[in-house]
Structure formats: structure tokens, C-alpha cells
Image (cartoon, rainbow, N blue to C red; front, side, top):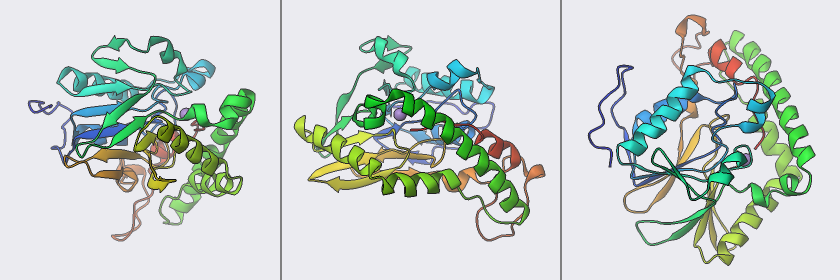
Length: 294
Ligand SMILES: [Mn+2]
């Protein structure tokens, strides 16, 4: 437990969420799409015994194309290492965008355990298989070139999204994620997501687990699939979500997207009045400019 952690000079908010376990994935650090500030805020105000980093934490695909590493991304890494140092058990399960880390499974870096996948036992005795999930993504497995192409198409969608919201903001309308909407609709339509979810759940059952925790498709959800508890912790590019286990074993999705639309630099925001979420300030929208697919 991280009980003696002192506030940093940056001015930490007090711990507002004290849970047994936290799962986060698809941070995509190293891309402008990563909502590092919102993530940092979540990490600062959350205390847990075990923190699982469920893949696509650092985006090797995008970093290979162009180097992008602002201070805020460094701050996230520092915060994670600091948590590990202060007694939080930090477990890193690599995903497809950080598959380079799969070479280091069973190693420990600065207190962070790197594992291929693992079994988590909840306070109420349920076994949850923790995996990023890309191994059950037909596109990644069968046509990697298509995954890379989709990656760039996704970046383009986020760029369009930025201009779309720029216009919305100028009309005093709140932020609305086009890419999130499109992906939800399109991927549902081609039953891509459903196949992924079923495949992951089936594998969890095969491994004798009560449920599975994964990421990869950037859509947070807790539901039952064929008698298996399917939990997806979402992402920190679009939905800004985490999965948590409370001290009694209860699982919950934490959604920080409402907080993320609060103005970070009020000088560039368009006021919308007291009701409804604030539009994203321009710098934040610019960060959504390029991000990666699942
Ligand atoms: Mn992934």
C-alpha cells in the first residue's frame, strides 16, 4: 500500500479512489493521442494494491514512425515507477503496440513485473485471466499489414475528429468523439468486436478462469459472455477508462472522460455556460490528432 506518498510539488489532488486493484491499458504513450494529463490525474488520485498495465502502454509502432515524447508522457512513466517503488505491485502485460516488451517477460524493471499474461484472484475468490487480447484479434493475427493500414486510417479519423470538434466548440457545443462513435458503429457492424470478445472469453474459460480482463479494442465494458465475465478496461486515448476491483471484490469501470473535457488552459476554451461538459481546449484536441488503432 502506498500510504506514505507525499503530494508532489505539482500539487496532487488527495486520493479520491482507494481500491484493491486497477487495470489500465492502451495508454499509447509516445503518440499525440494519449491523454497523458487525464491519466496522470487518475494515477495521482487513485491508490491500489495491484496495478495491471494491460498492454499498448508505450506505442512502439508510432514511435518507430516519428519520435513523440513530451514531458507529460515522461511524468506518467515516472508516476508508474514511483508507485512500484512505494509498494504498489505493478504488473505489465505487453500488447501488440509494445510487443517489443514481450522479449522481457518474467523480468522485473524498476519494480515492474513483465508477464505474458497472468491470473488475478479477486477478494471474493474469482479467477480473472489478464491479457491484452491482440492474440484474439483476427486482423492482427492474419493480416498485420491491414492492422498497420488501419492504424493510419484511425489517425486520419482522429484528425477529422479534431476539426469537427473545433467547429463544435466554436458553436458552443461540447466535445463529441467521432472516432469513438465510428468505431463503435462500424466495428459492431462487421461483428469484429463481437468475435474478439467471444474468442477472449472462450480462451478464459478454457484456462479455468471465471472471467477475463483485457483491453485492445478501446471499449470498456463488463458483461457476461457464455458464462464468462468479460471485462475490458478501455483506453486512455478516447474513452479514458479504467477497470477497478474494490476491496470487497466488486468490479467497476471508472470513466474519467467527463473530467478530461474540463478546460486545462481556460484561455483557449469556448465557454458553454454552467450546464454540460466543457469543450476540449485546443491543445487537448491537438493531442487527439494522431493516435493508434486498438
Ligand atoms: Mn492493442
